Length: 156
Image (cartoon, rainbow, N blue to C red; front, side, top):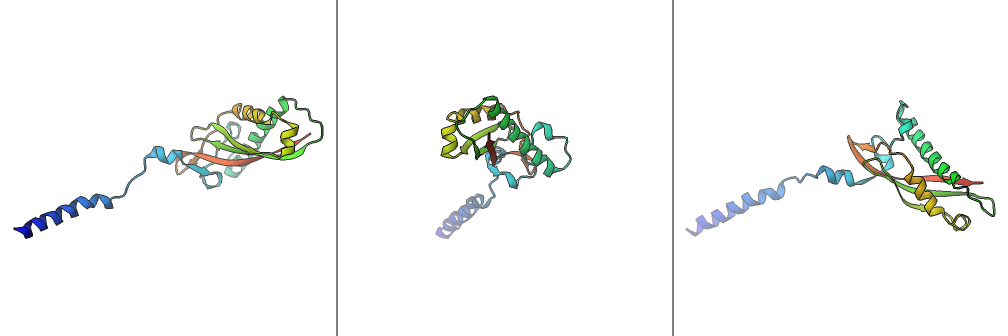
């Protein structure tokens, strides 16, 4: 009798433990929320004006140029006056989410540039907010969030 009980308990444990060996699948929403490096996507974020270019590499270059031009236009419209000549580079950390919205997560600028243009934070935020919606990056057929650094040269 005790052997039957031990056998029954052992068999029950073996059957119940099978679910521990099953592969767990990720929800597709979890995959889309992952931030992926700009260089590891199948298709990078695309500026609307660059859709008609057939080459992927040229589309990427076009999108980077259009993003830079839009930021430059925003800064130029502010009519910034400085006491001294500027020749500096600032680096924008941009995130483009899976819906194509561009978000300025951070930027790096020299102390000198901050002193010359105290309203630089708000000017950059406004410039990014005025960007059109982009086509999001694609990784394995799924729109994904990407992050990259865009250098902007400031000269007057």
